[in-house]
Length: 250
Ligand code: BGC
Image 1 (cartoon, rainbow, N blue to C red):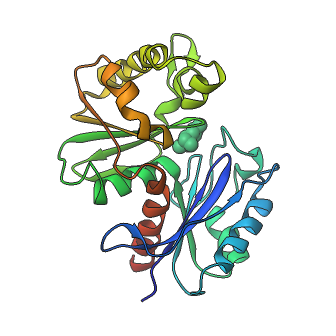
Image 2: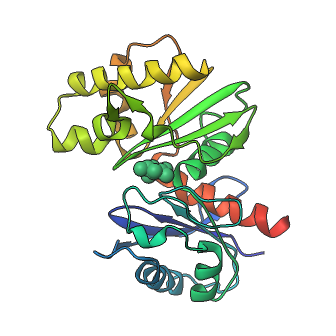
């Protein structure tokens, strides 16, 4: 059977690649197109169709990440950093129709969490693992003994009167030109709050910035073990591809 394709819908780019699920590696070069200025469902679906044309197999299963809450039936329920037109959209239906095959959507951080649990640092880790993605926003995936509890949205906890991601996401570091030290202070506040609420066994830090994990993770002053993700930027694609196959088999 052809390798499933994962598509990662992010604030700046839409990226796709086929994934070999026996290893979690891409089986062909990743393709990328800028996210359209107006990131409404139709415009984004069009970009995804163009991306899919670049891969040979037109029958492979397709999984798509969405940077918002995704209900069990594929309906998007929030859109903090994308066009609000996604809210209430049945994304499984719309994308299946536009892409001409069965498509399943999943929250982007949940996809990353799934990928880390199957192929990355969270593999084989029992107990409660919280995977956080630090990017434009903060995404979260909660895994208990490897099982995902979806849509936790821990980037939107209110901390010291602020939406947590507005202070501690990687976009805040960039926009406010924070040093690694100053950003790590904010991350300490953030992760201490998560610690207090969940008493996890492990935190995993994902998102593109985790490639610089050495610069800031050791500065985060908490009790719980906290480590950099393994898959980083590929995690969304890998998790989405895995989900597409899970759903097809279901
Ligand atoms: C969204 C989440 C998403 C995260 C990372 C947040 O603003 O509410 O659904 O996982 O950003 O993209």
